[in-house]
Length: 229
Image (spheres, rainbow, N blue to C red):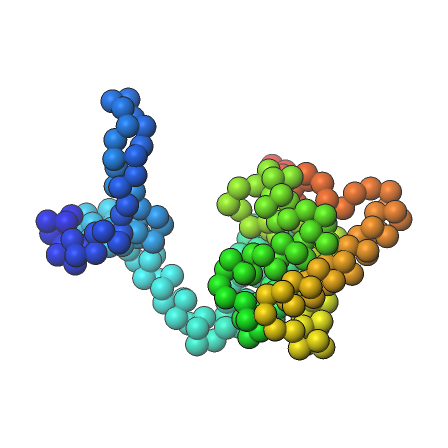
């Protein structure tokens, strides 16, 4: 493919990274690519068998352009995807509301001095620790997740408490006019504590823990599978 595509050769060092991989013949340096890199390589495959995949990539790119022009389309497609996966309408509404609240919060963070994903993760961890007693990374381990989106595996109460913590934090930022990571962390902790106190009251009334290893998405798959049978 590199012999046929000069542009692929020019950008090869940014597309792949040589990594030491254990093989039967010993450790070998193999060219490895992430998802974006694989998609670029696929574009250079001349085989007709690759044409459906190339058309799919073009379709996805076109849809993304539509969503940039009309963000509402992104929400419509997201709702449809959750619906196709078997999620109930009530859960979908909560999830979509949570997405909106999260976007409002990250916009506040960006405008108030947070820089990039690492800062967002630090602030999110503050809210999560105060709300659930664990960080998102620890939460994933409880539910047996790796790269999956944690919130897609939360039940109603987990989503509601997450939204409460983040919405409270957003309001605190605005009231306090907080700027800089230290101040944002203080607000995040307090916002999480509001949700955390609600969680503790809820657990007392229900007589059970909110944070468990139960995986809402896996439960949905079982329900959908049984209905098909």
